[in-house]
Length: 403
Image (tube, rainbow, N blue to C red):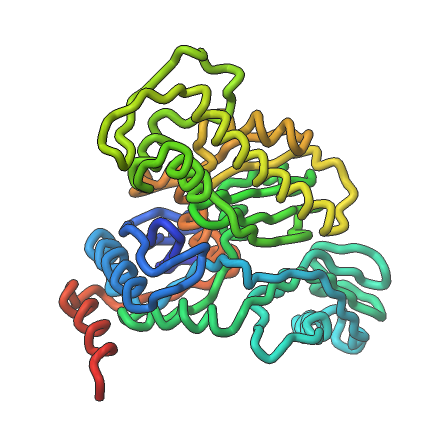
């Protein structure tokens, strides 16, 4: 299977466009674009015009580096509007067909998604968890003989208006949103080892505005959710505590931040300029105490979500942390203490091609979009690149002009 894949990760803090080439089943990164996010808050569009400009910049860079004129993409999805549940569907197997057919599987999936969905929401994902043929759990039912086929699926729904706004931002610069992919599921594709999926595990993608969670059980997704808290909340706590502008607080977090106040020398200090203008001395231990409190709160929310999902296991594979805010020093220790499970920080694995910029946990969702597309066989062949930045931004600006 060969082709070109394009993923567009529209996050709270950045827009990342990644192009991959698939040859002989291997994914190779051939294009990459990055721009600061605009018009986004907690994973949702709040200003279509500003968000479209950021998307245009990232897509243009991806086109320049890949050499392709990109026209369709898999787009990341986050935000509080995301809901999930598990559902079952069952159908009779047409025995005269020589076992389970693709038609039987499609009918079972159709039955599983026949759930009440409000008019202002739509199904984003219908992920099969497992199949049963005559009450026997099977991984691949195609061709198996039996009387009854049953499937359990994980259903993810999103607010229709939120999806339309994301699609509009992409469409403003000539990109069609081929599919929306939940951040947590994309990140899981990028960072999880196969044996972690088989053992129960949680992926927590801690971004700027949200923490996206996917709980895997026996190799398949069991529960997903989006928590409206992330690294920006840590930065905001620092900004308030030190009375400094948000950008200064972000630099302080990156340079001096730690989640382990007990392990920091009480005499370790740094200077910072608050709004008053005169530089002051700040103890790193005090800073760490502020960060620890917020990070602990995030994992308490994760714990409550696990309990609310109905999961009653022990999570032997623990929690895998990814996303930009997972790079906070000492974050695994806080996760282990609150959740009482093993914890590790992970970036995208098994990267090939233009990967120097993509090894960070910050790009787990971006790379995961391509892995998701590959696993779903969503391949396409775009035409060779012919246009330049002027076409991208021109298309967008024309969309804003009155008729």
